[in-house]
Image 1 (cartoon, protein in one colour):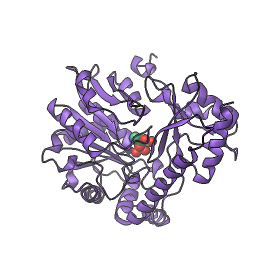
Image 2: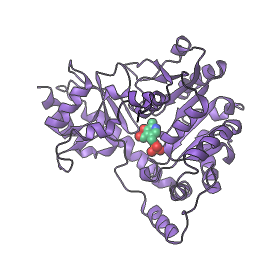
Image 3: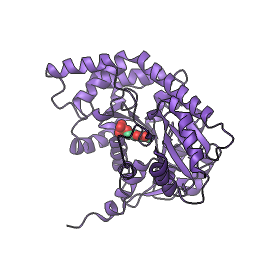
Length: 384
Ligand SMILES: Cc1ncc(COP(=O)(O)O)c(C=O)c1O
């Protein structure tokens, strides 16, 4: 058989490659900052609830393509509180996680040969899906001081084939959070050029819970331009349950429903029950975890303030730190050496798009802050 050339051109899943470099995955010395996963289990009451629900036979059947009503309602309520907005439950479609949400949105918007504007560095699964679909990414450059993309670059990247602008905020891999003004500027450009603005907000629960990440939902006509992507994976530690969401206008949702019906029929029903329970009952638990992550980010900033350290932090936030390494070889080699010689596992910047040879991504959410001084010690040792 002959595989699809676009799929063959796409690089292999980065996390598996980096895992293959580890000699002893069970080593207690390993500082694993590779994959972005919550370092804790779901809340005990959620586990108890789900156990009983499954044992009572709930969650075994298909749901509607769009997802169960209680979850769509709870998500709309959550968004309306957080974003001071007035969206409807009907605006939300539940997906098999946020990655699948992105794939469905791209499929509903783009054809092979179309172009999508993405910010560098970009989330590797976004880039992989664009490659698989034969869609050309046009890159907003990395600002090495702030890691915030510049809306002024959009005009120079436009072509007749441009269909969308994709942002991730808080960002993977940089951890940078884009200001509401920055996101608004991208929205206005998208609107002006009749593009979709897709914002992946997987990590939105790990930034200041008291201020809205942006004000796009307050525009009366947001549904013509804006597509919000969300994940329940990190917020309620449900990564394996595969549940996320797309929030968008009804006409676009009708197109998405065709894709969803063929690809997944519905998101995991038990995952949807778990997410509903989380939204309805775990507000305080969520805030506690968010606060813990923000303290961890502060601890990392502090740990890096060591004069001998020549690795430098570009940006830190939510789950990630983007770090500039001091070597003249590319980040792939640096990352491999860090794991082989120092048992520090991180991802090379080269997995996040062109021009990222000088950078590494540390998913600090995975590691208790008591280990940060040891991390820095090993990074200093690697400079020799
Ligand atoms: C930016 C971003 N989007 C989506 C995902 C995947 O989320 P999900 O588990 O909901 O598919 C991740 C996970 O790391 C991510 O970092």
